[in-house]
Length: 344
Image (cartoon, rainbow, N blue to C red; front, side, top):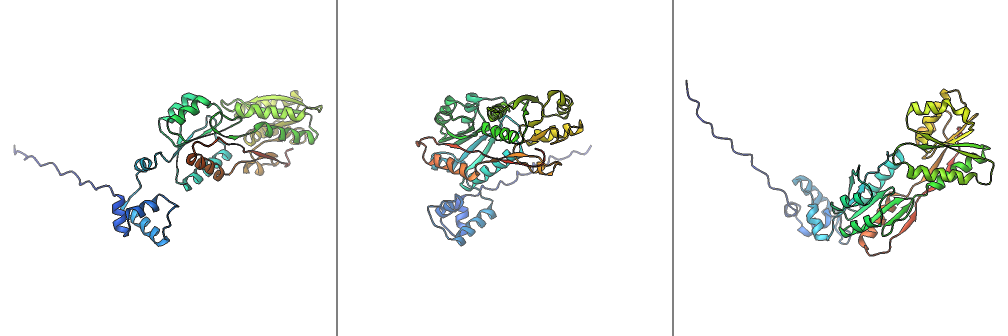
């Protein structure tokens, strides 16, 4: 046998040094302070547009990105805004709203992080959020209480903004009046001469914080009239909709507020399959004013929601971060407008 000589191990690949702001400054021909002003979007110092372009080009060429932890140390706080994921399915309208908020906050030099908090609720969830040391937290829905707000603030959060039906002590509040949405839908159906009104109440977990006030709003809308309201539990499934449609005539209903456009489309299709004319036998109205509702035949009546601009919420967060000792603000953020189409 011919012995095989041991081969020397290949040398490890040379590690490239991490580019620094000093490298960017040398390549761009500017000071490190100028690099910091440009890449951190500092508005207090005026930098010419040609200089900004040189700095950005140098940073791209070197592959340099600012160090978030170092920037946080200099500022005394992070620039992270935490947005816990909602515990309910996000519809297209809500997703669009969240995208607007993220874009507006990024323009103000904040980093938006969505946090999947499935299985965590209320103050327990707040402790998990606090571990990430965000400078602000935007909380969709209900559940967070004053203790959770205190936990977040002790961990360094300068702003806590809740988006729900009621204000929370210590937090800024964007109040969502879903009862008014229900009142709008109910008043429309009564004005159209409908007197036996069904209201869809989704069976999906987590939606009760919205469906409960909407049902209450419809009941308030029919007070003082001879109209009646029937609660209709419904899962978001074709089978469940078909079963409800099959017993529709026995319920004696001549109208339905179907919670939102998605449930309205599900139920309207089932009613039509059962031979129930819309709006002849039963008027149907949803909420959210989704594009798909306009493509149905008959076109779907709906309640259009006026959501706050993402820019307004981002400016509230920024204001609270800069003035952490300021008094919490409370804003009513939903306006409603009935869009009457053929289905009602």
